[in-house]
Length: 223
Image (cartoon, rainbow, N blue to C red; front, side, top):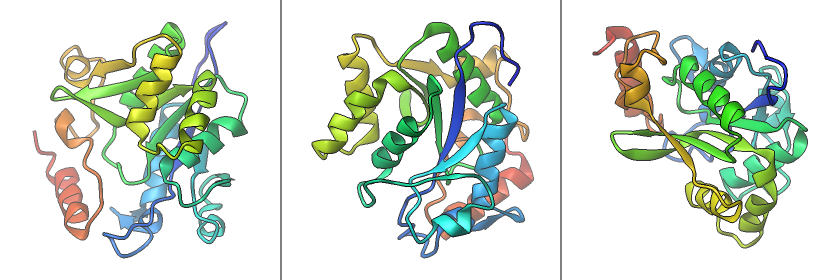
C-alpha cells in the first residue's frame, strides 16, 4: 500500500481457526478454483497492499499454514475468532488490524483497500461494512486501541465478535463506522473483478454446497 505522510499503518490477518465441522475438513486448505482458500484470503489482503499474517489457527494446523504466511499463535485456543483477533492485535504495533475469515474468497480487494483508507482517515476504532441494510462482522478494520476492551470481553467469555466490536466502540465513546457497500459500488469506489453484486461477496463457504455455489458464481459472473 502506498502510504502518505502521517497515514496510520495497517496489517492484514486471515482468521483460520474454525473447526470446519460442517465442511468435514480443514477449510483453510480446501481447494477453490485450483488453490487453497488460505491463498485466496492472503491474496485479497496482499492486493490491498497489506502485510499478511494468519491468526487463530489451531496448534496442529499451524505448520501446514506457515508456507502461506506467518502464523500468530492463539494463546487461548477453543474460544473462537475473538481469541485469534486479540492475539493478532497484540502481536503487532500497527495502529490498525484488518481481519477477514478464510472462508470469504469472493471479497474484492478494493473493498478492503477502501475500508483501510477510511479507518486511517477517520481514526475510527471499528470499521465494518453493511450490505442490504445488515452490518457484516467481517471484513473488519480494528484499531489497536480497542484491544483492552476486546480482551475483557474474551476474559468474560462474551465471545460474539460483532457484539464485542460494538461494545468496544461504545466503551471508546464512538459509533461503529458501518460503510454501505451498495453505495460504494454505485459510486464506483469499489468494484468486483468478476462483476458479482455486493450481496454475493459475503458468501461463507461452510459446506460443500457453498463451495460449489461460489465456484459457479465466479465462473458465470452473475450480475
